[in-house]
Image 1 (cartoon, rainbow, N blue to C red):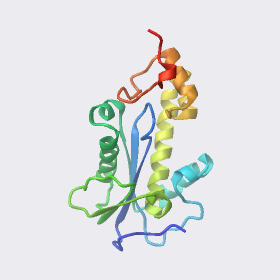
Image 2 (cartoon, rainbow, N blue to C red):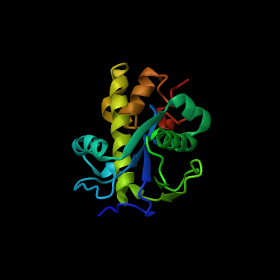
Image 3 (spheres, rainbow, N blue to C red):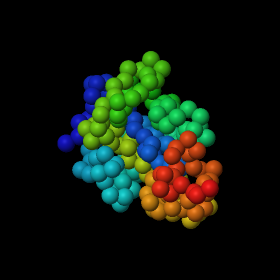
Length: 199
């Protein structure tokens, strides 16, 4: 059973990101403040949910949240500042866009930099422990998936609508055969040694 909040502040915000391990596309973060009494029988860490349930939950979360927002940080910036800093930046941007200022921030994982002077706590596997982080994980994942499906239209040979930019065998083979796009993260190891091009 997921807990409502960590801090006992009524305006506690949960934040999480999606797409950190991908070879292309943005890292996407969401921030969510839920009202006390918020309930959902199916809400959990987005990785534990089917795509169908994530898509059912998104409008439910958006309708019931006191505030929510989503932010993307794109490959050029990821390559410049590295994926960890980009993930934290995406979370900060999402928090900044909230229409209500949170009194406390809970973060999935173990790495975060304080946002302004708002107290915060990192929680390993927080997306399977706290409702607001789980809600943020669902929004981050679904908004990022939508973006990847959109850019799939431009470059269908990489099949981003299915792999969402993750390093699947098929995605790596497409990189080997077609090269890379501006959506790829140049600082990532896009091809393992066994797929390196023969020069």
